[in-house]
Structures are given as structure tokens and as C-alpha cells.
Length: 428
Ligand code: JFZ
Image 1 (cartoon, rainbow, N blue to C red):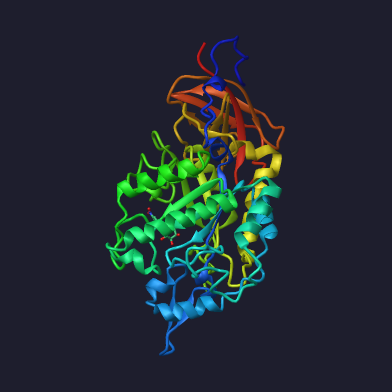
Image 2: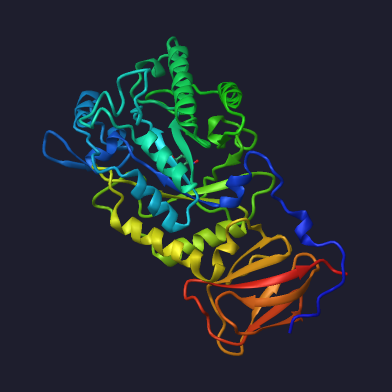
């Protein structure tokens, strides 16, 4: 059984990593919704060439299917996401337990999803959509009503603007990009900007330099010092922006000295692809969130609305399943406001996060009756209490080898992952 509570002394609650700065909400919220939606959504992942053959891809379809610009512009002209329902999207995020939303304001195809004044290549001026509507404004208002933060993805790389490709005119492109970002900040007051397309490319050559990134970040901070910005604003992976966007889908350990966020898809595409039904299971998605939280990261999980703006039902169902896990028996405490556990080695049977003096061990392989879970300590600590969320069974804690054995008295209350909350104290 748990050892008796120790007397006063230092405790882990005082080493709370959540010192206040502009990233505080983001570090605590842990879980967000990514939305890939743009002119490419009109094709729903399939382009039929003039010879009748079909080429498939999602938000990269113009590039990977070599769609001539004029054809792609025709596609965009027919784009009419009349069923886009900001309230329904925000509700889907809320049902999932997602506390922020990041939507593509402009992807690599350069198409702006708001009525930008910098060019006509946007959802109001080049579409069949109701000219009075502005989906970013609708989303901002619905998110505000729900207390959900809103961020904008913005691609630096631009396939459409002719000034992008030519070094002589690149400064003109850059000026328009600055102006677009100012429109977004002044007009929609985003909480976060998620840059992309900063990398070296050909066709068109991407000349974005680390100095360009530094200059842009300083400009944005001048407009709104509270903005959270990802590191792809520049080319210096660790120092640019507020957090990293790891290339591995989920890093296998906490990342030293850098906040990070894994963005992932629910199926195999970011943008809508009608043929892609390779959905990840709710258990996998929930466990990904737990692994990420236990390694101190955030999870940005993507939906791709169809040509009318509707989030696919399989996405909504999976999001709801994750949210239902989080709402069960306070299991969300293993995620929100919790971070990398420290103190312990990541076990093979699950993930461990910590908030202050509480370790949350999320167990996906619950031991058979009489068997135990080993928790290896990387630094000495004591365990003064242990319980299973959503169950009144007892957990026997015994010191064993480099740590503790945890022996439950009953079955797993949750088949996806059951959370053992351990109260821990530094050694007396
Ligand atoms: C980029 C985009 O090209 C893609 O369409 C999508 O929007 C995604 C979220 O971001 O793709 C990337 C960018 C960076 C890496 C991988 C895919 N990376 O750093 O490994």
C-alpha cells in the first residue's frame, strides 16, 4: 500500500512548468483541431485530366497532378462551401476536448480563405460562394462564443503569386504577404499563427531565408505581442517562433529546451480526399494524445472538410470518442495542464504525465489479476497515494528495483486507457 504522507518539505507542485507567458494557454490546452480547407477541397482529392485519367491528391493536388493554373482557377471559380458551419465545427472540436483550432488561411496554392485586399485570388472574389460570407470571421465568432482559441495556418511558399518565383519581384510578394498577415491580425485577432512552406524548394524556387524569418517574426510580434507562433516562420528550427513542429510524427521522448506540437491526420490526407477511408481508430488517437502529453507536447489533429464545407462524419465520430475518453472520470486531467512526467522512465504499458505532485499513469495494457505494472524511477521519489480514476479499486504500491510496482485490485475501468493517479513527493 501507499506509504504514509510525509511531513512538509519541497514538493513537485512548486516546480510547476507553467510560468505565465504568451504560451501558457497553449501549453495547458494540449489538444487542438487543425483544419485543411481551401480551393483544393473543391476537387475532393480527384482531378480528371483531359484524357480521362484520374489523378489523386488532396491539398497538393495542383502540384502533384500538374493542373494548369487556368484549370485550377476554373475549379476555384466553382468553389461554393455553402454548408460550412462554423458553430458545428467548433462544437465538433469541443466534443473532442480540443481547446484550439488552427485553420488554413492560405495554403501553398496561394488561395486566401478570407476577402483579402491584396489580390483577387480568394474565397470571396474567386468562387461561387455567397459574397457576404467570411468563413474566418464566422469561425472566430463561434470560437469566441465557445471559449476556444483560433489560429491561422499560412504558407509562405506560394504557387500562384507570380512575384514569388522571381528574385527581382520577390520583395513585392513579401510586401503583400506582410499586408495579408496584417489583415488577418487586425481583422480576426488570431491567438496563433502556424507558418509553413518556409523550406527550400524548386518550382517555384523558395528564397525564404533565416533573415526573412527573423524579420517577419519581429514584425508580427510588433503587431500583437500575445501571438503564439510556430517555428516554421523561419529556418532556424529551434530558435524561431514559440514552438517546434517535429518532423517525426510523435517524438519518442520529451524534446529538450523546446515546446513542440505534433500535427497529425485522422486518415492519410490533410485536405478532403473522398477515396481515403483509412481512418485511425479512436483508441489509437486517444493513446497518441496521451503519449504526446506524457512527452510534454501538443497534439494538433486534422480534419478536412469536403467541397461544401462539411466535416466528414467518420472524423466527427472519432473526435467525439476522444472527447468522451477525456470527459470520463476526470481522465482529462492526464492531459490538460499536465506535462512531461520527469521522474520516471516511459513504461511500455502506457504513458505518464504529471501536474505538480500528481503523476497520471495512463495504462493501455492493464495487468491480469495479481500481476503488476512496473514504474521505473529516474530520480528518487516517494508515492504517498494511488487511485484509479473511475474505479474504487485499490492500487498496492511497493518499492521494487529502480522504482515501484503498482498492483491493481480490479479490472481496467476503461478499455482505451485507464488512469492511475499517484501522489508523489520528493525524498524526505
Ligand atoms: C506541410 C504541407 O506541405 C502539407 O500540405 C500540410 O499542410 C502539412 C501540415 O504541412 O507538410 C509538411 C511540412 C513539414 C513537414 C512535413 C510535412 N516536416 O517538417 O516534416
